[in-house]
Amino acid sequence: MKLNIVPARTGILWVKLGVQTFMKQPLALTGLFFMYMAVVLVISQIPVLGSVAGAMLVPAATLGLMAATAEAASGRFPMPTVLISAFRAGRQRARAMLVLGAIYTAGSVAATLLATLIAGQPVTTAPAADGTPQFDARMLLVLLLHSPLVVLFWHAPALVHWHGISPVKSLFFSAVACLRNAGALLMYGFCWLVVFLGVGFIISTIGLMLGGTAVARSIMMPTVLLLVAMFTTSLYFTFRDSFRADDEEDAAPGPEGGETP
Image 1 (cartoon, rainbow, N blue to C red):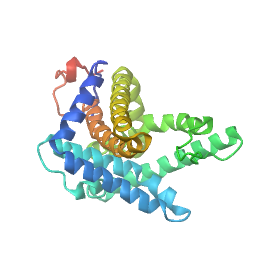
Image 2: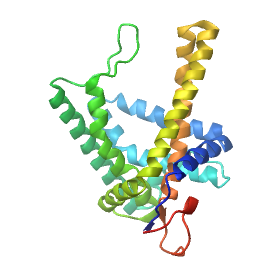
Image 3: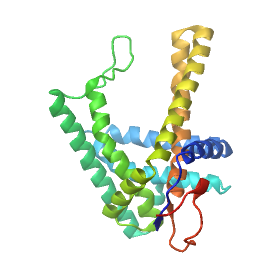
């Protein structure tokens, strides 16, 4: 497995590929995303252990959605069983994915507790009087402290599943890949931010014109969920273009003129 260095403009390509692949199988990919969300919602209702179990499954679920994208990109219809791809690749890799889940859970709990200690009170997203969620400084602190986890786990599940890398090494390689391809990932994130803000503005404007704030909110939520599903579809391409199997020719150029170190 070799790291592939790509130019910043590849981030735009990743967004385009995500959108194009989603449009190939919109019903299947949307259904799989909502299936994942439903499972998380059900698990989260379990007292005490629900949040822990949900966090444990994040790496495996991420891999499942990436595997669904790989199927769609190859012209195949992604079946619901693709979501459990992490547990169908043999006992060793399933165990490795669970280890990743345990590390992610521990890191998430630690980040949340640290944010709570710094803020001096529990982190909450309780809705305001008008029903809109409140994202105060405490929540921003939680997100900030989770940023290292995002870098460590961005490629880790795919490295474990498709390259057989051990959990600890996959976290290291994921972090290195994100840092070496930081330009492309920043462009990727910026493009998605533009997409979310642009679509959100258009949808909210249409909703306000049709029936005011209530209508705008009613159509905004499903639109956001569809955009998130589209975003998860693009994750596979950030991994695919950041690594290359050892048996590929060393002289082969990466996407958009990328090169290996």
